[in-house]
Image 1 (cartoon, rainbow, N blue to C red):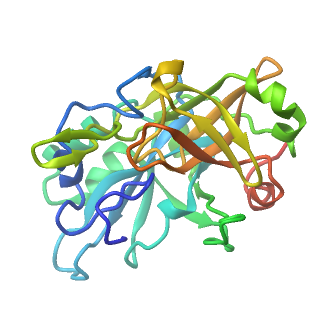
Image 2 (cartoon, one colour):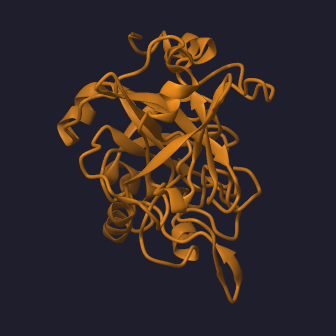
Length: 296
């Protein structure tokens, strides 16, 4: 994993706060997205958490670590869409799992107590293992970083645990077709398992919480290829995304349908202003997704 303790917006761990200790180190109540204008999202059963099992010291004699790291969405019965930076830079042998549970952190805590010293059993208790595929062009230039990935899962194993309706994807260039006026009146919603906005304390700035699926309204700010920027400003009634929400969905109500139009990638460090999300109606995103899911 990268050396930083928190990676915008995926959780990244260093040796000081790795694995199951990461969320404990971020002191505070269990919550996701941010603490303002957000609420639980038990109905968004297509939205899940990416759980990763990995070895952090290169020694096969010591147990691997396991924790949730990012968010994502089921776009068909066996395909979980997330961000490429969530599946990159892990040690060799890292294993990827998906949980569609509402409170993945509590599930991991319970599994760790039931299976001490057995991270594989912990991961399997809360999630289904799959195979990661990321855009081969990642990391691309700022003009298009190709920050998109999927986890291919065994459909029967997923269906045996959870009931969900896969998210609907947009048509090619659908956001462009709305125009500025149409985008300004479109309702957007961000969903994920990430931490809260920055809070100051005696030890400095922290991002508490994480591991519980929440949702929050966001409003249109700007559109370009490949990004849609969404405002997270509290006075306007918005919520927003933060660390651990990477790969998670940004839904838009278009034509009476809830469409998964973008995935959370980055934004301002304190998690107060803007969610910068990778468009799924762009040529590059659609080219990557085409082998894995039927596109509209």
